[in-house]
Figure (cartoon, rainbow, N blue to C red):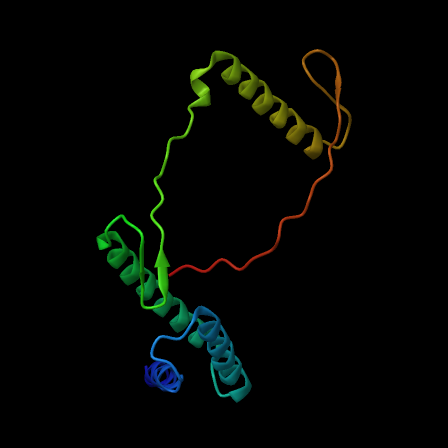
Length: 149
C-alpha cells in the first residue's frame, strides 16, 4: 500500500511541476511518457503492481469523465482548452428487413462455416453439391495481453 501512495504522490508532484495549469494533450502525452520512463528507469518498482495501479486510476478517471460528460449539454462548446462538438446519432438502416439481403446474408454465413470447416479439415472437403471447398488463407491477429480485475 505504501508503494501505491508513493506512486500517487510522484504522479501528483509531476502534475504540479508542469508549466501550465491546463497543459495541452501533446504536453500531457509527453510528460506522461517521461514519467513512465522515469519509473521504469528507476528500477525499484514492481512493474505488475505499478501497472495494476495505473489501470485502477485509469478506470476511476474514465468513470468520473463519463458521469461528467453525461451532464454536459448536448451542444457545441469551447472552454478550458477543449472543443466539444455535438453530433446527432443519426439512424442505422435495418438491412435485415429486406428478404433478399437476409437470404444473401444467410448464404454468406453458411459459406463462411463451410470455409472454416475446410480450413480445419486435413483432407479435401466437399459441400452438399459435391463441389470441393477451397482452403482459404488466414491472416494472423495481433497478440495482446488481456487484463481484468
